[in-house]
Image (cartoon, rainbow, N blue to C red; front, side):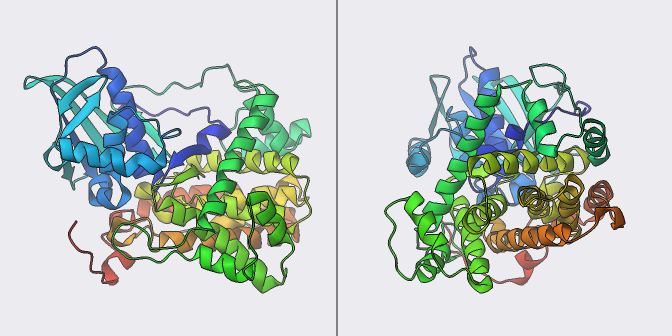
Amino acid sequence: MAKKIMEQISVFDIFKISVGPSSSHTMGPWVAANTFIKKIKGNKITSLKVQLFGSLAKTGKGHGTDIAVMLGLSGHNIETIDVEKINYYISEIKTAKQLMINEQVISFDPETDIEFIYKNLPQHPNALTFTAMSYLEKIVESTFYSIGGGFILEEGVAISEKRSGGKLPYPIENASELLAHIAKTGMSISEIVLKNELIWKDEKTINADLNKIWQVMQECIYRGCHTGGILPGGLNVQRRAAGMTKSLLENVVSENSIEWIKNIQATDQSFSNVIKWVSAFALAVNEENASFARIVTAPTNGAAGVIPAVLMYFLCFCKNKGEEDITKFLLIAGEIGSLFKKGATISAAMGGCQAEIGVSSAMAASALTACLGGSEKQTMMAAEIAMEHHLGLTCDPINGLVQIPCIERNTMGAIKAITASQIALSSDPEKAKVSLESVIKTMRDTALDMKDKYKETSEGGLAVHVSVNIPEC
């Protein structure tokens, strides 16, 4: 595998419009499949094999990895696909035992042409290999690694150090460099991040694209808070966000999401009710995520509910400047997420759930603190506090489904983010004993020390101590 060199990471690399349930096990393989069909374009292909290794094999069925691969090979874009048609597309492939790849129809039986291999490849536990054949002769073979958050690496292909656009005016490898830029320029974190983003897009486009990200998040919350029933996958998990919403609104009906938010703001804002609303927001997103619905990777799919829940909390229950604060929130959250990706990992298969819920909680805590008027150092302190109390969190999905304990963990991450923010706002960062940089390094070391059975393999924790009966499909 090519040596990894540091990337220039945009906020829009951290926040990506996607489809549930997993950024590493659904989005990454989907993007890898899209990449592979571009590589083989122009070749006469008669058959194709897919091998899923390690964590992708062990929890691939529950995470929809096989489904993602088939959709990606069929040329569907994960950001724009009509999610209502996913079941139809997969049913067609399974029934016909054929794939349409680059306008060529080839024989493809998912039962035999997608192979689940439980051993890890040395480079990363999330690996998959595509092999394209022409009349039994191998034409192209490529191996990809899904490294978390929808990011992929291809075996033997060097990573470009720079995204197209030029050199960042304020390059940031770690928290210390961010603090140095703040001290030297007197700018806020969001201002520094915006200056960096301007090498890729103009400010009007940045604001519009961030607003689009928020709109997708908000629509996801709204759908999840108005959809009941049982989640797919066989665990028979009951969706709860809709019931909580109905109870909190005392059956008041909203015509649309804008009216719904106004109705939320008019409800009893006692501590108990606010906590219930935050929980409902987070549950809603991850119940949608578990249903192959449209979500925003933030920074992963499994942790997609934390940031929307905290931002919705801020907009509903705190004094705010509307779109201006939404932009600020997402710019800061995105930068904190990139610090964790560069200094540790955002892959549960590498670091357990501390890499997902822990990182998303840190992102949300920092952004909320800044929007509530905290200083730059308090903003970074909030991120540290949130992660410090997620260190060592394991990833142990029952039956490989992003449902138990994943959905409830998003509520915990959101509440911890709000708590971390309040503590930071009441604290003097100069007296802090733990820095954001030190907690990122600690998280990295903890990830390396953690046993593989707690890293998205469903071989430890709740995944082996909770008995479930799932009928054969």
